[in-house]
Image (tube, rainbow, N blue to C red; front, top):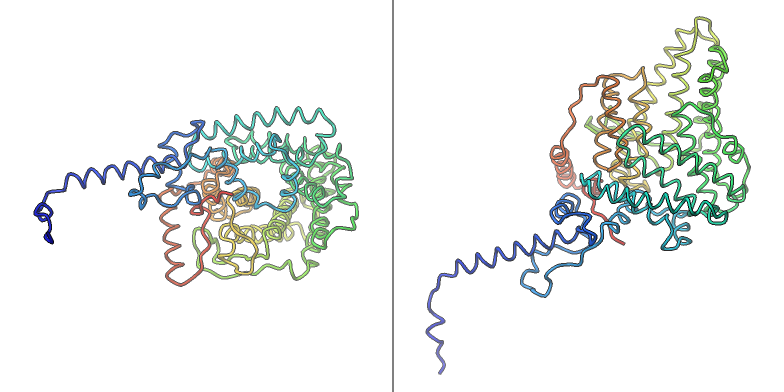
Length: 503
């Protein structure tokens, strides 16, 4: 009475027992982490799922670290989330940001609508490319094939064909080809979808421009059509030009600025198409190109102040080409500026290639070639200066409304960087830098077409490039974040590090 049991005072060797408990806890954590990414349909093996979770922090928003829960034996394994749902979350976080017109389209779409499936396909394909998973890519392609079958059925019903969701599905089928583009032929598939969407726009009629959602979907289509025509030297379909020329009461001032640029670039497409089919001689071609050049200069000089960008100085790094970068008010403005720069480069390339010995301007042909080459160089440098904005967003400009998104980055810089890299008058350093950025962007974002075109340009120009490995890029990313913390900056999570937010 009142004294402890003698057995409680005896020293025992508990080493083996502690080791067994530690091993059991380690096994539990390993199995739990694997379950976070593995699909109930066995699309990914447990080992693959663990690797994805480790590299991308996919499971961050699903469940906290389980290492402190081992004492609670009631939580043995969190529920498995299908890889399709990861694909949906990846798409909305990195490809769309849920703009207003997309929200409206999704509200009208039923659960059986192919629009939902193509969103899953794009997200899964980007994840598969980023994390090197053939199984997930195969599943994404299977789902995309089912979308093609479903959309063909919907097109047989005139009312279903005219819906916003059908149009958006076809446009996103084009996005899928860019994401999965393992060959240059993927661009042909993308073009086919854009041509199909253009034909569908004709069926939908002008009344689609009467609603905000319909008008914004048309702008989406128009941008893709223009890009395809500039790349292939073909004229913009008359329907797109005619509908763009319509004056709408609901148009904003910025939409009118965008429209004005589009109509100038449509003339450039017609010019390059006419020469391709030999409808005009060199002298006529150069005269028209010079007129387009003048109109593009006028477009820039008449922009309102809110379209101005800020040029900031910085040290020269892998992402900052010439020691400075641009900051824009938003992503849309930056993208329109790059459209202008790319088209202006094409106009001056046309002048250099076709101006003869007889001057068609107030200056000599030699002086005109020199002027065009200088302009191309400046435009190329300006395109390079937009890359940090796409990559880091608010990290560079605190007043900007843009947050970095992998899918947006992977698509928005694909054409501008390829224009810089393929321009004959580009410097060797500019070409090398642009191709290296395409490699980096393709690997960071999962938009495979960047790597495919970079490989093509590397061979075409015989570039001697050293492509950084994943480990090297990761080390640089961590070093940059360390510098941010050291100097007290509020760093925005990079595209490489940001986890998928599940909704």
